[in-house]
Structures are given as structure tokens and as C-alpha cells.
Image (cartoon, rainbow, N blue to C red; front, side, top):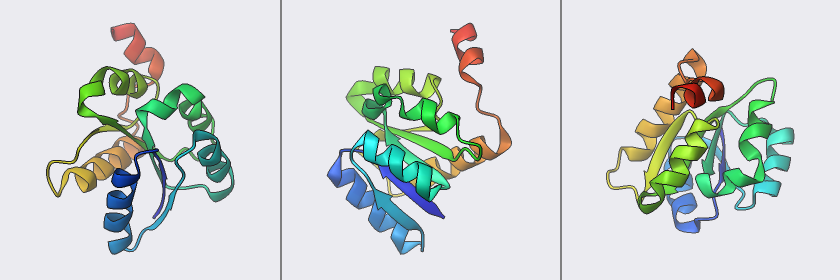
Length: 132
């Protein structure tokens, strides 16, 4: 699986990269949303792990417009749940709060994001906005 990590949190990116590469996944880390968008266009990842703080750059809207939209796992610090929730409403498939407290947090969140993206169970932005 090709995984793009768009998160300025170097410690998290290193931890996630080590885990994913140990399971034979191809991982690229881009801390800048603009570099991540360029990589998304050319590399076509299967999963994008993106920091909720970067979503103000329009990255979620660009991902949603792709013909073969990858799964989107949003990350955010536990004390910024409000920002993570707003980002999730705009297009994430799953939410992962940092710091990771358990060894299975990352793989469980990745699996949930992939399943939600593949099955279409993730509500679209309009449905979430209408129910809020």
C-alpha cells in the first residue's frame, strides 16, 4: 500500500513510518500541505494520513476531487479535538488522536479509514452538516 503522511509532527510521522514500513508499505512524509498536494497528484497514494491542522489549506477538498479518492485518516492532538472534528466533517474517513496510547491505535485507525472509504459508509459533508 502507498501511504502519504501529511503531518508537520515529525515524531508522529517517524513512528507511523516505522510501523508501516515494517509491514511492507511504501511511505512518504510531506510536512507541508502544498508538497503533499503535489505528491498526491503524481503518486496516487492508497491512504493519506493528514494532520487536521493542515486542512485549512484545502487539502481535503483536493483529495475529494480525485477520480480515485484515497482513504483519509485525520490526526490531531487530543487537546485540539474541536479542530479534528471540524476537519472530519469536511471529508476524513477516520480520526486518530495523538499521542498514540496503545500499540494498535494506528493500525486500527488505518483499517477503519480504509473500510469506511471502500464501503462508502462515511457520510458526505452535506449529510453531516445537515445533521449538526
